[in-house]
Length: 253
Image (cartoon, rainbow, N blue to C red; front, top):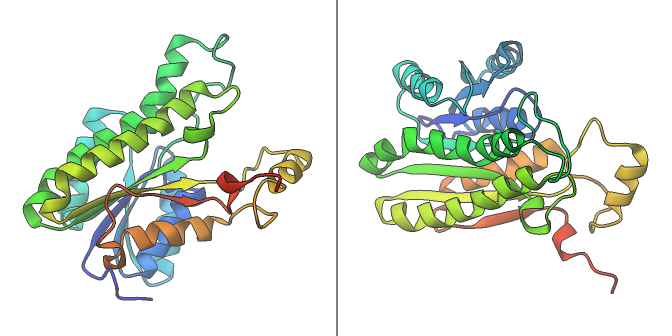
């Protein structure tokens, strides 16, 4: 276990599985006390158990990050148990529970805004809950997890892509506001991540678009996020770090 983040408290939203789970475990390995968040309690307690079993510090933070009251209560609880949040990873996103991926013309207005709320609104709510204490203490890291869909767009995913694109503007704007106080705000742009519902044919096609011919592992994405949470990234501000295997650089030359 590294000691780079010893004494720091990290909240990773949507960390019951996937990239969030890998990030929570990585930050714990780096010495942080981690609040594991998800709406599914079973997933949260599973990750907390994994971290504690490996000798790290973790607490459960079950809650809906699109709910203002739930976010405020969650942050208060974390602060009471572990101390104030020093590191926030806004990882929660994707498809909100119950919302379907569909074309813009066929999607309900409610579903479109639920996608935006889940992917952008949740990050704003959680950041708002922790940013002022970070500014007062003169140290803090906020990392938002975005997607290549923010730049490329996505068929049957206008709400999702719009929410992720909004994260870019949010990161760059907030970074300008708080950098002088000692708080770093940055983001990662995820490329080809594992997806359990993706067919083998689709996987093969996507892998022809990146330099490595494979998707990234959850641990590779977590390593980039952990870097942005560290003092090694102290001079980065408003950066959207592309962790995409070169897919955004793809061309036929």
